[in-house]
Image (cartoon, rainbow, N blue to C red; front, side, top):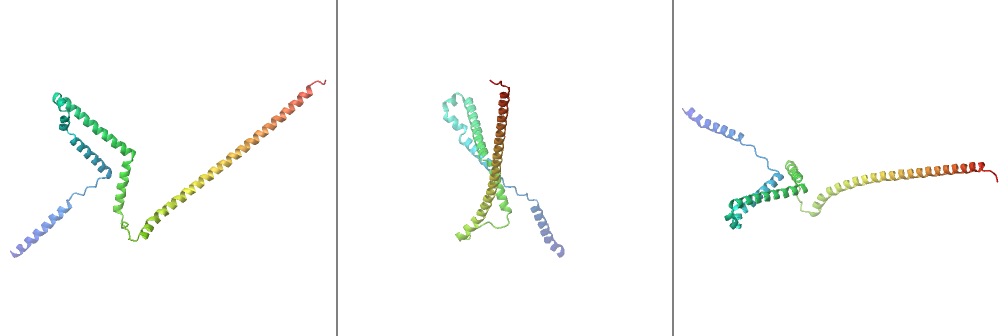
Length: 207
């Protein structure tokens, strides 16, 4: 009996632990955080809802009380059309702003930066308290990167200038060749003309 009594609490504790373990394993996986694009759309939807709530039909009817008394159904129809057109107009304006500002790609880029920062193992940069060292550590990588970019741009420009110089020299050579051809043809025509004159002189009767 004592043995049975001793096993009872232990067994209950074991069953409780097993139940607790099973409870932890059945917890739902954490949902992914919405991206900035989704948050932006949510904010816009919430704004439209508040806008419609602020411009309720009751307020609209109070503003046009006399017309509402005469034509309540027409008043309701006008209100519904006004709200629908207002929402459509705002949505189109926001869509144009997103397209012109390329907001979708910017939001996606920001989400990517945040995810990469979460997976980064090295600690984030913190100021050391010495301004000279902080400026040096922050500016040197940027200046080196800018220097590499300038060297690449200079190399590309030099290559472009070299090709342009070759093109100019080739054009000059072509012009010189054409001038020589024109000169040769001119001399050939002059020679033919001279022979023609001499031939004509031989056929003329002496006076």
